[in-house]
Amino acid sequence: MVNKLVIIGVGLIGGSLARALKRTDFCQSIIGYGRDAASLEKAVALNVIDGFELDLAIALKDADMVLVAVPLGAMDAVFSSIAPHLESNTVVTDAGSAKASVVAVAQPYLGERMSNFVPGHPIAGTENSGVEASFAELYNDRRVILTPDATTALGALQLVKRMWEEAGATVEEMSVEQHDEVLAATSHLPHLLAYNLIDTLINLDSSESIFRFSAGGFRDFTRIASSNPQMWHDIFIANRQGVLTVLDQYMADLAILRKAIDESDSQYLLEVFMRAKSARDRHVIK
Amino acid sequence: MVNKLVIIGVGLIGGSLARALKRTDFCQSIIGYGRDAASLEKAVALNVIDGFELDLAIALKDADMVLVAVPLGAMDAVFSSIAPHLESNTVVTDAGSAKASVVAVAQPYLGERMSNFVPGHPIAGTENSGVEASFAELYNDRRVILTPDATTALGALQLVKRMWEEAGATVEEMSVEQHDEVLAATSHLPHLLAYNLIDTLINLDSSESIFRFSAGGFRDFTRIASSNPQMWHDIFIANRQGVLTVLDQYMADLAILRKAIDESDSQYLLEVFMRAKSARDRHVIK
Image (cartoon, rainbow over all chains, first blue to last red; front, side, top):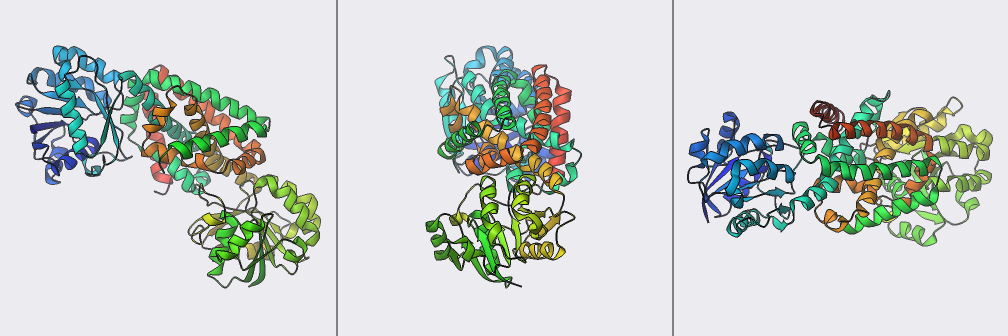
């Protein structure tokens, strides 16, 4: 279907897609591009990609599809670098965790070629980073959100959709704004809460024994606080408004719960806990 | 070592201890007591306990050890009921998730027999409740905290310690106050944060799609929000002060993080995330 797929940033996300596509006939060759030659060499040695280029003009020549799978903070530099070398029919997509910021960054560099750019976000990951952490099953039964707009070329959208489906994912479309709101709520806010919990506990007098007596619930709750700090920094900078909106609601609700504890308001506490348990049991896959 | 062990409240916690002890020669017989005959019959059918009694006087006759494994909100009723029937040498322990409140409740009923009461708390559990959820391995490699004081009889302490060790746990001692502070930080606060997150998301306009696009990190983070609402209500009522202290610190820290996001303060965000990831990777067992 595709001759040449170029993956810019062969880490957990890009590497896992490459591994998954290698098991299909979606593309003839997968070429990696990145700043770190050693990491790209490792990706070839691990048989994640077929080869790599350190010269962007060569990498992008005759490319049918380009996946930009770099941290949000590197998107500006990448779109600025690739724009002059893109063929007129090259389809571009990305895997950034926030979409409004990527679109805003890409627009001035891509110009009319924005119609061939399909913003995307695979809802999958682990707390680990790097090509060593990549695995072909990462996208199995996971959702990928694409956020095309009215100007997006249908052929580009269909090709990106097909790529993720070949990798095992289910693809859904929504607006950039809806994406950023949904992800702020289900992913960005929980990461912030987990990071903040660990940071609060570090500063308590008894922090040593506190961590020693943590159990399975704590381990699960704080797993996401082991995620890549730079990546998450980028996300909070990129989706500032989406995060602030849901964070303010969270803090307001927490203040009410605090008051209920302070006043031993049994009825309110029970109501909240029952409502939350019921919603979680109903909505979240176990 | 013990002839008769009486477990008051044969649910996840009491049932799992019974299952574990049945594999040892710690006691001759394990008798269950509770308000729900059907549940006790099920516990016998599942071979969790050897038998049950619905009459407390008969249940406690010649008991060497009594484990009170009921919700914190039921502690007062249980200690009031068992006190008149306790033999002078019966050792009593409990499994409540907060300790100051249990000691305060037990004191007036037990009086001089407080020396035979060893407050305890196994740091183990799942989000499920009831005897059906119990399993013998629940305490394997888990910690049990005992909170004796200067008046506790050494023989009683040693027997309770031995019981939990036979069940696979490591036993540590600390003061009631330290226990309640440590548990507020590692267990009670995370549960509150998880319940509050789900409750905040329910009330957003896009809550349907929000849950639909949640991924593994969200599932792990919110698992504890599927815990028993009544039990957690009891814990927040019982450990009110311990929870409020750490919650206030958490909310203050979160407000500072919010400001850093609002101001796109990259340096502060990175500092917090790196510090938290480093502490979590160092302290929390994977």
